[in-house]
Length: 413
Image 1 (spheres, rainbow, N blue to C red):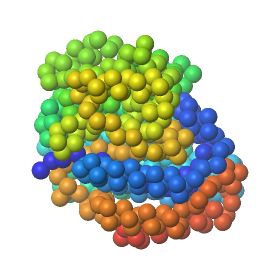
Image 2 (cartoon, rainbow, N blue to C red):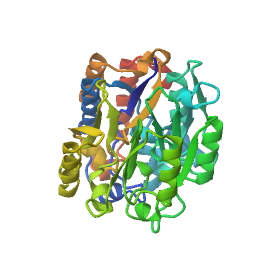
Image 3 (cartoon, helix red, strand yellow):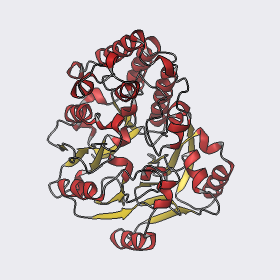
């Protein structure tokens, strides 16, 4: 039986605020602040518990080895000798944002009947460009069953940011769907991270039969929507988007309606929620999910409730006859301060759970085990001026090792 599983990235012990992501307003705004890795990771675990309580299936991806000594060696240096910006890039905990891990096409969409996953190259940002080898290793371990086809990344220079710029719409998770790839051309002062050729290459590799390509609006990127999932999210037959999310919106909507007659578009007007408020609150970087009852819920960060225009619109929508019937607020403030909301932390995979390596699936008991490791081993705080401290580096490396040992995944050590 095919169901949707949300795989969340466990927030790593090196979580810090280096402000490395140009165009991500929250990340750059909080550069130099003290981070709290233990609290961040426990917030992530609590979000996964909330998903389980909603009746959703939940999986995990593991923190990467940090610092990335192999990447630094390829630059002809060692961590202790590297310039400060390279140290920060090597230490980044950004793999926690699993939405950037890969693009996923479920088996019903692919001509060969397998679920395809293409690891994202993330070449636009140096601190993320070295993630893909370890992400690929995890994908090949978790999805080793013949039900899956796991692909290496699209080559540089064609930037690919994974599921953050990809949406799938279908009558139901197990039905054949329409896959939407959102690319960027220009973002004014900020880079457009998803190259149209990368999107096209992934669609070809996944052997997709029903696919659309649409440009993210330059206005959205310039306002700080560095990924499409900051201004739009889809689930089942529902597209939930800001009015200014897409360029050529009318043609895109018409094509989508032709391909999926059941389509329901929920568009938030700019006159009610500005782009600035949408991005500040991460209204669209929420998990739009189908509950076992068949109702749709929106899993939102606390910042959405704290933004008056956003919360007002949401209350009016839920009180009406719209498809989103329930709001679930979660605390992911440590992730939000680094520029990632609930949707950034998860990768959606529609598959039969029996085909997934069970070590990557969680229940309450396994989350208890993960939380105990975090409480004992994760640093409580990382002042930004301490990221080169050898004692911190030793603790970060030992913490990851303790987690992999507790989860019995020695292949990643």
